Length: 630
Image (tube, rainbow, N blue to C red; front, side, top):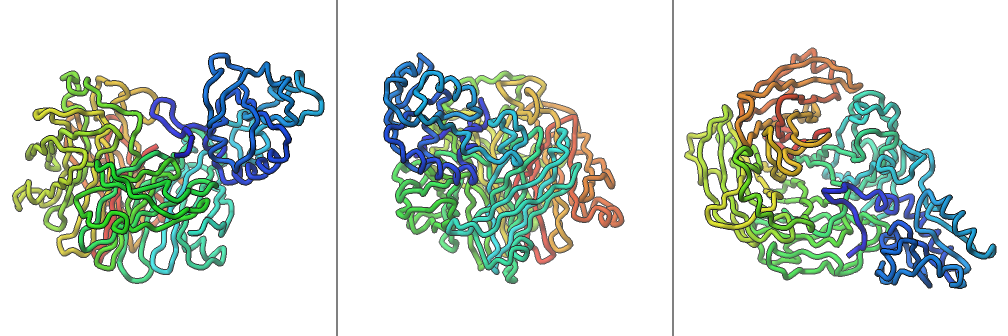
């Protein structure tokens, strides 16, 4: 496993990791390692604890001694080296010293005063990105300097991809944003590198694989696109929706959420295939170091018998892994766990059935969570507590299936109930799921829970904790939700996790807020307009853990591609209710024409809505995934 710190829910993201893993920094690290290998006696001064991730992400170089100035850190192990006091460094006989720190001018001056003049002193400033790529040049490790992400980018004569987002940084004061982009093919070879200026204001942003392929005269590719947003404010994460659509007439269509820029030890929520399906996991190396053979593996969730991927994966390369090859005989609704060793950001998987393909993502499995007994005794003021809302698409045309997915290393039980609501917020039924084990294979088909004549026009469900049969909970409740047209022509699936919704009282960091402390009681969701062939839609859900406003006060704000507001439309959703909205049905044709290539901002300052978005075509193809906000 890579010895790196990436993200945790207390401190957020680790800028050191991104500073070392950035593709341009990785190239400079290779040059630095070559220089360090020329030393006769190399010492490393590690004032900020950067040595371990540096060791993991840089090419190998010999180290004769590791030194620290923090007396509390003396004698500790860092990447296999015992730390020594900095006061011993002048007597160590080092002809070269590496300061494992950025913005190290003062540290260089401090060591220069105690070391012989012949000693070469180098710092990690040697691997800095160019100043033109920095948002804050005064503090290199400012998170805004590393607003980056990866994209599964594909244009292979069968499928193409289109990334859609908006310049949401402008709402936080950013005035001049641009993207630096690098495209890697399946072997990790750089196929294109370019910049894209982003229009000022809340403009829409589109990156289409067909346009990139044509502009750079490329052949077919399946790889990853690295995005670095420069000049941003407010958010250090590049959020996007990604459509994958057929170009060969097969009718395939799917959408996924952003890739989550942080590598994880494990991921979960990867379904096993049905007997008539193929499930392909797209393994994309997120670093400039090779993934060793056997370093990542698949396991049936809860089996603790991982099957290794017995091939090395080169830097930034992409590999298609057939789940059935590693786990033969495992079928839906069993699920698998990816032990990724922090080599990958959130991967995608592809389900192939009836000559059509759909893409979805798996989720970060938390290593830092343990069962929390206090969840069993939440204050009654928090009502039903944690809720995981998901759409029930109109049952006359679609089947809806839910699969609870363990999403933490120590999540051994899932004590659950399914609450189902009509669009007007009426509770239709409560269906106990019992105490599910970590290795369960229980998928709930709503056709087995509801009579055929109910929810013809859809509604929504909520997974909630139910301790009537015992069990434990940690608040990281997740599920995978699969939707299929009843004629078996098309399918989509999505996954997400639970929160406490719309309560004035708080518990720890719930109800979660994107900005500021809890409670999160407002909504800002992004919905792109799609195209004439692929119109967008969204299912908006108003989940409430406890009674809140009787109805939402929601506004759909139509923007053109430059970010100017074209039209607004009020929408009211009953508490615990839901509503499907489609911009092409809500807004007037003239407004839609003016807003071509734009988007809809779904805004509510009175409650937190949860949304799922997708595209649909006249031939019945559709896609679905959860929405993103900012």
